[in-house]
Amino acid sequence: MEGVLPAGRPEELQAALAGAGAETTVVAPDRVEVTGATPERIGLLAADHAIPIFETSTETSNLEDVFFQLTARADNGDAL
Image (cartoon, rainbow, N blue to C red; front, side, top):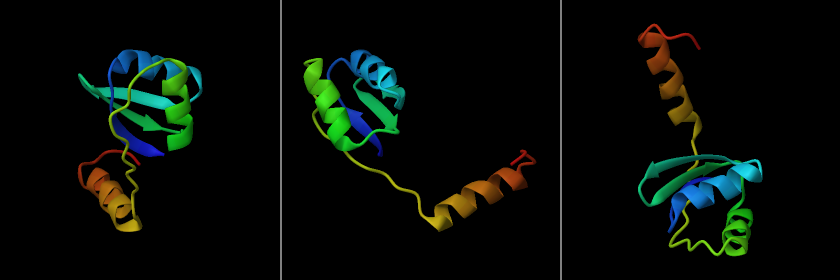
């Protein structure tokens, strides 16, 4: 899953998910971006730590998005 979760105590959720092998970033005071965990795994970890999650959403990239990201980097002179 890739998604952003509005959550109470985002730093605690981030630590729990990172401990389970997911990549996480706190992107706002109440939001955690997660990669590498299913929604079910996220929900179970949050429940185990009594951390409320108010919503989950999944973001996916399509081939066109990936192409534009790669070509934008090339146009800026960044290495791929």
